[in-house]
Length: 364
DNA sequence: CCTCCACCGGAAAGCCGGGTCA
DNA sequence: TGACCCGGCTTTCCGGTGGAGG
Image (tube, rainbow, N blue to C red; front, side):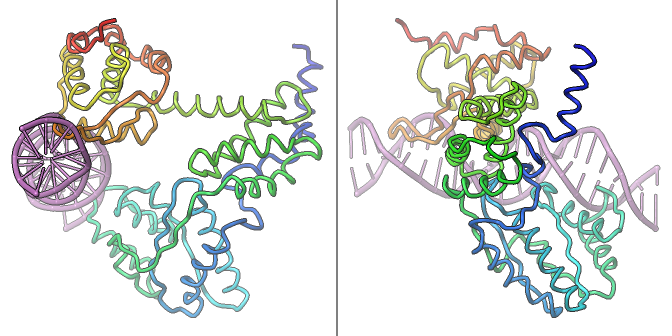
């Protein structure tokens, strides 16, 4: 590429490009001025937290909802307004935000709270009680925290329903107006992003990702309009990335399980049940000199794979013939093969044909 | 209506590699 | 150094259970 060509690329980015005005508006951690279709939740959260303004104790509150339904952003939004209001009235109020899902355990939640108060604490090694003491010390003059942070029961709750296609459209529209240069974004493309994300549990994060990726695709191919075909391509890309990411991070036994399901599916064209999968799994383990896990554990792993979307596993009853999970592969088998071929440990198992599979082979 | 299959999935406890603290 | 803690992964134990077949 010539220097002029390179120069052009840089210049284009400096000027914001021909598609984007500000792509940061499409990031999911961007805080917009308003949060459409979350008025109800904002009000609820606000009224629960309001007593903090007068130093009264506030109730615990639980927010339920799938990813991309606005839990994080609504919480941050309300905390921000609360702090502003306190400042306006010259009242001392501090808030701290800890994402418990990311923290994962009691210990880590309290450890994060300590850190948010500027107290460094070891990431492990202390008793939870000891940690809580340190947290109280860090709070010092402030009121002592309700020990119920330790229990997982709140007194209040707010539910975040998945966004509908129309609601997602409103969210996207608002951000797109500022994120894109005028006339760049096709309305059909916007609707498609909303519809696709609505089909996928009404996930606003997904909707924003689709829109951003679609625009990047258009930009890269030097097109001046973001259209439906770009969104479809973005959908492919986002999904593909998700799958390869998921597959590449799977631990050994989950990989062997996935291969087991795949081989059963190849041998016969119907879905398999836990018992069959476990049988094949054991044989593959033997072939690879790996100590097999128990069926109880395998059952749990299958559920995890189902949640990740790599498998489809649902409980069914065959009446007289018992109750079990029906299991199907949730991704294309060539994705699995491509990913696992990189892995020394399981590569050999991809081609291995266990007898327990042959037994299930359907005769033509 | 009852039985009984082939599992399900909760609870508890163990193991292990990481750590703290006195 | 030894007692103790955490988190994750796993095993063990075991009380369910939807519904076809009797």
